[in-house]
Length: 153
Image (cartoon, rainbow, N blue to C red):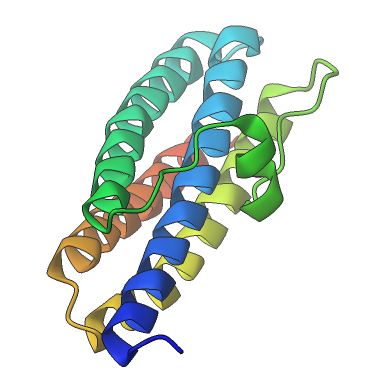
């Protein structure tokens, strides 16, 4: 039987692994849209998506490193990411800029909501590293969704 501290550590590490998986898939989707966006908003969306996927890369690295502080292996394969993530990959077909914005807005908003739950759990056990990461991620996702919505016609 696990001790209470070990159980909390494991629960936090599992939440961080889910976070890592979702952030990675969202980064890949955003990068895909950066490459494939077309239309009148091309230039501004191309730049916006680039800045967002680059920021996500930094958060992904931070998340993996915090997971490692628990002496737990960070997930690092698409198979592992897809098992735990709620974020869907980008469709294979070429889609409109509006569809890209709608998908990313939904993804950022749902990420923000899930991260708030994970942050509450981390607060209960006093994990300040996880709490700080989640605060930063929630701020990022809320701002990213707002920036994307601001491009809508």
